[in-house]
Structure formats: C-alpha cells, structure tokens
Image 1 (cartoon, one colour):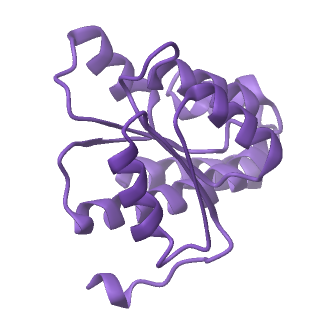
Image 2: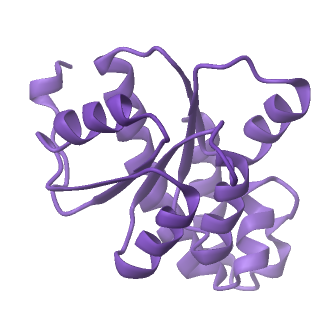
Image 3: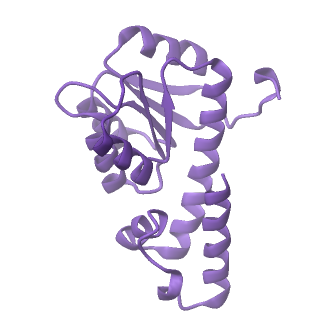
Length: 178
C-alpha cells in the first residue's frame, strides 16, 4: 500500500516529543498531510501539559532527552491514560537495561534514521493499538489491571463475565499478532 492510499482518522491527535528541532519540523510537516492534529513539543514537561489539554491518541517520543527521558515520559503517559500507545524512537545505541525496558513496556520502537514508509507503518500500528486498548480498557475498567494485562503480568480470570473475558482474550491475541 502506498502512502497516498492510506486512510487515517484525521481527528486523531498525535503528540511528538523530541529535543531535535529538525526532526520535530519533519514530523509536523509530514504528518500534518495525513492528520489535522499533530502536536510537537521539545520536552516531557510540555508533553504532560499537552496530555492535560487534548485527547491524545498516540505519543511518539525520543528516548534520549534532557531532564526527563522518553522512558520516564512513557511511565507518566501510562499513569495519565494507559490506553495511549507510546512509541519510542532513538538514533542512539541502547544499553541492555533500556532495550529490556523498551521491549517490555513500550508499544513500539523505531530506530533513527527511518523511512517515511516505516513511519507510516508505525503510525498505522499505533492507531490500531489505541483502538484495541480503548476496547480492552472498557472491559477491564481498572488502570492497574489493564497495565498488568498488556504487559503480560496478569491473567484474565478477574473478568467474571465469560463473553467479556473471551472478547478481552481476542483483543490481546490480536495485539500480540501485530
């Protein structure tokens, strides 16, 4: 599928966080062609403020930033609204702890430099994850249990209704399948 053939929900809000002005400009110019609501900010602090002001559907954040890095921001986003997917980007080599954390907790990772096609695949996946997370959260209705579920740390037994439990299982299987 070409980039021009892709269909996006233009009302979706994408928040991009990076301390690199050039990359922020790229995201703003390119993603605004497909989404009418792309917010770009320079810091985790500004990102948290944006979360309070807008209903964000996807966060794309650099890992290495001054003061609060992308991993710390990811925790803040998930505490604010666990249904918002957080995708991390980095041009730097990650140490083992960072690789483990990114693999276990981030909803996606993209290594710089990346192609426009990779970016679109990334955004497509993020929007699908957002929809799945919202549907799953409606079934779970508990932030802690939801986060444990998506991190693979909890079973579905706490959902008493069999139909809801089966629906939640299907959502989790679809998420794992990508």
